[in-house]
Length: 397
Image (cartoon, rainbow, N blue to C red; front, side, top):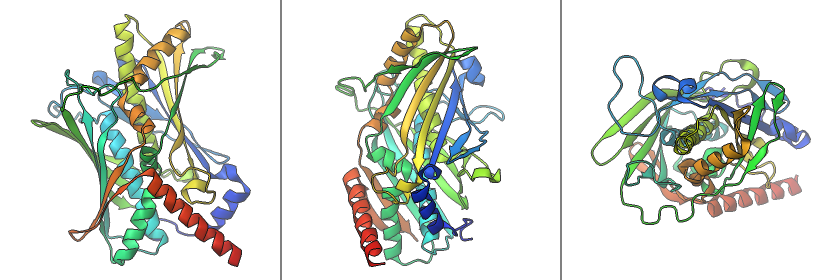
């Protein structure tokens, strides 16, 4: 054990993933009931994690992720009711937490004992004239910075940080073009109806003529032990701010049953669901109708890509899907039209679909060791370099 992680068996896992590819795949999903009454108190949007499928196993996941609709920043709620993050804050939290646990794994594999680790992620959310998120404009100015406490050489820190940019799944999802496949079906007592695919794209000309108003979205994740971290989030405009947390994030530990919280992929899926559900409600109200049912978002991790076992397998969180199940009797075609309209104006799907560059910093003892940017060509070149080295080693063995 090092840093609370079991570091044995990694080489055996590589061989197993080559021989049994299905064992490398983990499918995560979350579900959000439509309607504020179903979603939670005071109009909150409430997601529940669903069973994790990892290889040939099914792992029970029972966590709730709550979001508040985007609106006035307001003041902290009275009493014991916590202030909840918006979907945009959780998107940044998902990136920060994923980068953090990838850092922990990277340093652990290199034999580094960590004294502390912190990752802050930040971005700008464009606002329209009504003070709400600008339709279909991706998050801008994305960056994350890592502060580390350890005794390792600077060259090793720089090397691990470079690898993290190439293999952190949620970071990679920002860099790459990560589409979301969307469908609608009617949920009935005898099972779902035929699924209808929804084609969508960010609204044409999104952001054209947009004002300069924006809010700063930030997430701050602090390592606790092993794969567990605590994060806080904040939203800030020029004249007011609001913060939330602390919240816990933890990696799934298969059948051990000791998971403490959702993981960073589930947080990202919940953020996607929450934003789309809020916009879907707006579209339904505009058409004078009410939708009932639930949204389910899912996505996949493939360890073969995350460990570069197979170069053609993506290291990013991928195969993202969003399915709307409407109550039987509601026209599926109408539901598909409403969902398509909501997606076309959503920020998070547009952010995932748009290839981005992310600024990266690494600091230790107040000294900045790394200040660079990360793009898909950069990380693809690194994976190519690693693959060439592996091929040379294999040919010489």
